[in-house]
Image (tube, rainbow, N blue to C red):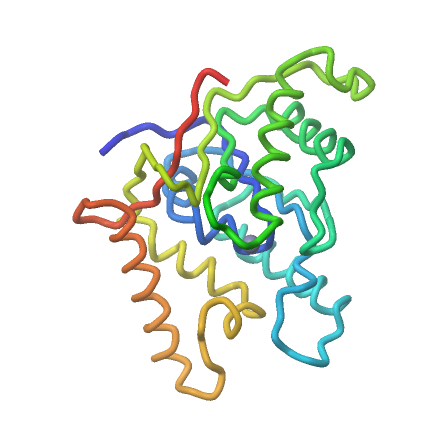
Length: 237
Ligand SMILES: [Zn+2]
């Protein structure tokens, strides 16, 4: 399909597990080829549970641990947390500045994030995450933005938008989909609510059902006969 892999990639998701769902196969494949992988997670995941009596401080701590455990499977160089409140991510200058700082410090060849133009999407954090990252890319590349950061401007070469309505780039993940699934399963707090893995049933068969679903989605991502992740690719940033 294509043999491209970047020297470095910064994937930015609204919540713990968004990156794995949308780009886990691509990042795992790239990591195995030598790409230096960075994760950026914008919110604390504090709304991500169906348990009525859950302690949100415990949930935040748990989701951070799960994200770190998952990132290990990608040999991620670093996981950055913005720690915004889940469901309340704002397109503020402070948030743009912080992500601009990440980009100027890491100097990623490729940035990956949510497509903010996706139609009929409900979750506000996914939309806001996309706008924030795009604003931060513009700020990071132009030297008159945030001069007080004392960081040289940096322009990534490519932006990969996941969840796109109109994808134009497909990454073959047939060799890495198993790691994508393992990484998703590290987010144990999301098994019931997001992955439909029911604790009462036989865990192995529940996990098999989830794996089959992930594989099914990956095959549907394109009309190709192998599993893919799809993106809208923007160059000339
Ligand atoms: Zn999310």
